[in-house]
Length: 232
Image (cartoon, rainbow, N blue to C red; front, side, top):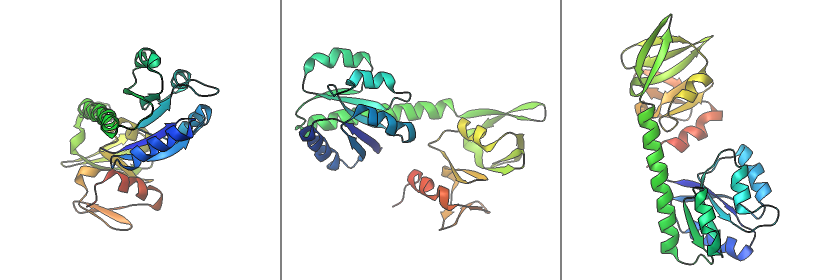
C-alpha cells in the first residue's frame, strides 16, 4: 500500500535525511517539504496526504500545537532529537516516534510498515462497514449489496443505480451517493458516471467498459481513475 507523505521540519539536515529515506522507499511518495507548520496547515486545506513526518520543535508552532489545529488528521510519525516529548506525543495517538538523526533505515521502515498496517486495517474496516446500503425507491427502502453495484448514472434529478441484476431509479444527487460509497472501490469518471472499479473490463483513452456498457471517461477524472487502478 502506497502512502503520500509530507515533511514538516525546520532543520535542513534533518529534512535531507528524511528525504533520503523516503526516496529509498517504494511505498512512499513525497508530496511536499516545509519548514513552517502554518504553511503545512494551509497546504492541507486543499491537499491530502496519508502520512506526516513531523518535527516537535519549530518556530511559531510546536508539533503538538500543529496536531491540535488539524481538521483531518493523517497518520503522524514524530521526528525529534528529544526523547522527553514521547509520552505527550503518544497521547495524541501518533503512529510512531523517531529520534534524530534518522539514519537507521531499518528503524525507519519499521515505522512506515506500522503506518501501512494501520491504514490497511482502516480500509478493511471501512469496506466491511460499507458492504450494504439501503436506497429509497418510491416509498420503499431496498437493501442493496455494495458489491453488486456496477455503475451509477445521473438522470436529471435522479440517479440510476445499475447492479448485476437490475436498475434502480433513486431520487438523489451523484455527490450524495458518492459520499456513501467506499472510496477504495468506486471512482467518478465523468460528471454523470461513477463506476465500481472491480467491474471494469477495458479502458481506452476516452472510455471504459463494464459488461456491454461503454462509459465515457472525461479528461478531468482520468487521472483519478488511473491512480485507483493497478497497471502492470
